[in-house]
Length: 241
Image (cartoon, rainbow, N blue to C red):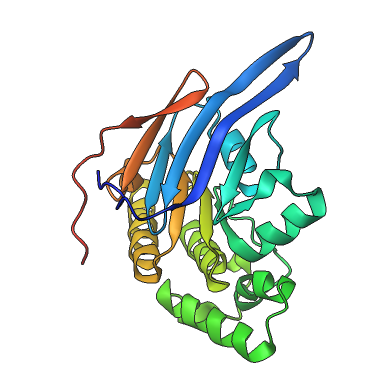
C-alpha cells in the first residue's frame, strides 16, 4: 500500500463515527467509533460481509444519513454540522455516486442522465454538453448518447453511471458494489475502465465491494470488523497502462 505524503492533508476524515439502528426492542450498533482518513487521489476499497456497515458508512460520508456521534470532514468542511438542506447542496456539488443498480433515470437519454448532476449544479448548456460528451467518450460509449437506459446492457449502464459520477468533477466519488450486478468478464472490463479514468482525472474514490477486480487497483484496503475498519494487506497493484 502507498503511504500518504506527510504534507498531504486528508480530503476526507471520519472521526469516531457511531451509528445504531433499532431492531424491535433492541439496538444494534453498526458503526462503533469508526475513524479513517482518505487522501486526495487515492482509491480506497472497503471490504466486509453483508450487514457489516459498508453502506451505512457511505451514507454517513455523503451526508445522506447523520451519525449518532462523531463527525465527517470533507476538504475542510464538517458536513456533520450542516443542516439537511446544506448537506444536500454540498453532496450535489462535491460528491459523485456509482451504485450497484446503476440508478439511471429511464425517461432520460444517456446524455441527459450524464448531464443531470451538472443541471442540478447550474452549469451552462455548453459546459454540460461538452463535459457529458467527453466522459461518454472516456467510457467508450460515444455512439449511445441518444439511447435510453433500457436499450443498454448492464455493463453499458454502469459505464454511463461512471461518466455521470465524474462529469461534474466532484471532490469525492462513492461507490456501493459498482460491479455487483455484472458478470465476471463485464465486471473486469468496467473496473478497468473505472480505474483508468479515476487515475486520469485524479479523483478520490471510496468503493464498498466484494469484487476482487476492484481490490487489485486499490491504494488502500480496509476490512470491517466489529463496527470499525482496519487496514488490510493490499495485493500487488496492477501497473498503469
